[in-house]
Amino acid sequence: MSFPWARQYEPKTGLTKFLDEKLPLPRFVYNAVGAGYPVPRNLNYMWNFGVLAGFFLMFQIITGVVLAMHYAANANVAFASTEHIMRNVNWGWLMRYAHANGASFFFVVVYIHIFRGFFYSSYKAPREMIWLLGVVIFLLMMATAFMGYVLPWGQMSFWGAKVITGLFGAIPLVGEPIQIWLLGGFAPDNAALNRFFSLHFLLPFVIAGVVILHIWALHIPGSSNPTGVEIKQESDTVPFHPYYTAKDGFGLGIALLALFTMVFFLPNVLGHADNYIEANPLSTPAHIVPEWYFYPFYAILRAFTMDFILPAKLWGVLAMFSAILLWFFLPWLDRSPVRSGHYRPLFRKFFWFGLIPTMAALFYLGGAPAEEPYVMLSQIFTAYYFLHFLVIIPIVSQIERPQPLPYSITEAVLGSDKKAVLGENAEPAV
Image (cartoon, rainbow, N blue to C red; front, top):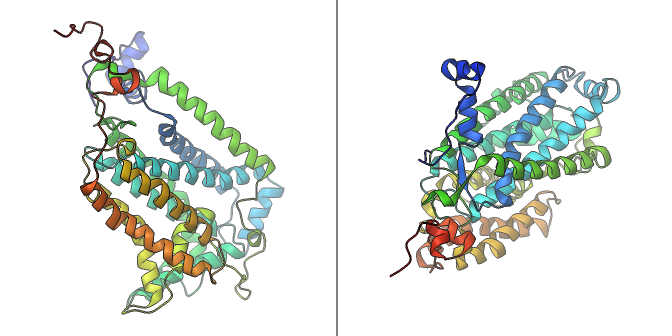
């Protein structure tokens, strides 16, 4: 994104001039996240969560690399090596609890980031590519988190791997060979553990690469904002630094306070007690569940209980993956010319009283036992989830009468005074 009023980088010293000529990294940082990047002046705290997601990605990579130095990806000693980290490695307990709870915080901020995108229609033109890359990041996060869940080699690790990889067995003809290829055998063992460890270590760096593309794509049209109105003049923007670096720094401080409260006082509250029991292929847990951040999609998977043309298990697998893949099509499903939910009264009602309660219910139902009435409720809320994206949003975008939009971001912030909107030199109306 280039604006004529954007501040230009000017190296002051001999070293910075040399770097700017030979390797213009300071200029790149200045233009990407510094004073040379104009940002809409009306961003609220919902725009903090993109920066928080980037921070937690780096946090997970750093703590994960430290843990990998002491972990042994062998089915015979994986559980013992995890306990070794907790008991014998200096500050190992802190690294492990920070990594485990950091994953939960990473998903929390990403879920908020995604639902902010839903409400403010951040997927609309000209930002479709930003949204598509964001969905790719989320899919890679899910794959990485699933593989990380397997590594402690507790009961939930083993049986979670068996259940999730077993889903591929539902695919006709090729399902069982794919399952064996993924596991390196007929059940989770050394081969599967080595593969999952390798990919769990590799994929965060792939995510980091896609995040760079995500930020690059963001800088072409620029950041969206709560009004959905595009930037029209210099008064609509402020430099990213120091205004939003200070605001993001405050948000990061709150997030770290919450994270380390969890790490020091409630380190196991988001985990499962059965994962402190070593994996036993001969003892099936009474209730197999994934990590909490997979609950909505696990509830959708279990909502299909009857064979209809295809086996119920295959329907569940298709629905679980489709629940995320349909996000790719949101830029074309929502045809409303207005972006912000603040100016779309009907869309706003379906968002707050339809989508949000549905996701909250699916979060709860994914962790509930696979029995009635939870299965029936999962079916009801799964039906509404797909109805919302595939039917309600397209219809609402066609029939809704949006509220009037402000002329500019400045008008939305300062009011409709002409001098405030157009600048101090605006001519008085004749």
